[in-house]
Length: 306
Image (cartoon, rainbow, N blue to C red):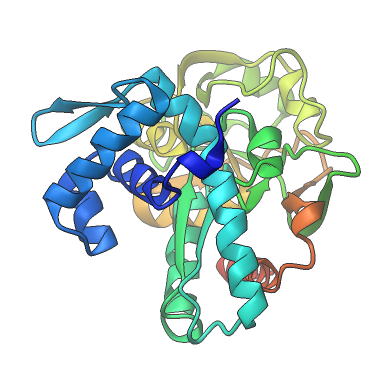
């Protein structure tokens, strides 16, 4: 076991910065250090971890697998330490310099990120919020528990005593097609949908979804001719072809305004599904996280008109 007294803990924020910036120069600017000082710190870190950690590539660096493993443990620990120091001093959104990381897997993620940033410009100008808007987040439950994510907005959320959640709004799925589609606009009945070809998102889970309101659509066994990774690809392909697609009702305005798509008058189910904000129960009373969760709630409801 390593004796921490023999390790200069000031090196750890340098490791974090180099890892996140993928650049010694970027890390130096972020930490207000000289580049030679950062290079020296990285050299000492290589000795501590007995690994190269970062390999120069072009103007930046590539991370080794050891660096990935260290970051997975270290980032949450440093975040917890920063939060503890901040809380001890008292949280003031007007002066706080805290950073938060939010996962928004719902297709509205990028728009929610913009709306939240707009709110924070005046409410908390020093706070930094980073976002993951991946449609298929990796290890969401573990990332919330170990502090890599401070909160998540999704319809597939981890359950249990380790997590708290808040329903932000109710959503539903609708079929959309381009405005001049030669066949889809004549569709009036559920059975007619089986004659159409769909473009869809790759499923996040195998088999039927456990989310009511989605189950009914998946069990129809629609003809998905193409599957892609992101919702904007779905909308783009639908607007440029005879394919149709399923999108959340909350995305209809974007589909109409940006892609000239329209909803088909076919209702497969009347059931809706809640879009939830979820966070680790251990962070429930953290004043900074309470604040950022409230801002997410306000921004999401303003975005969806709820």
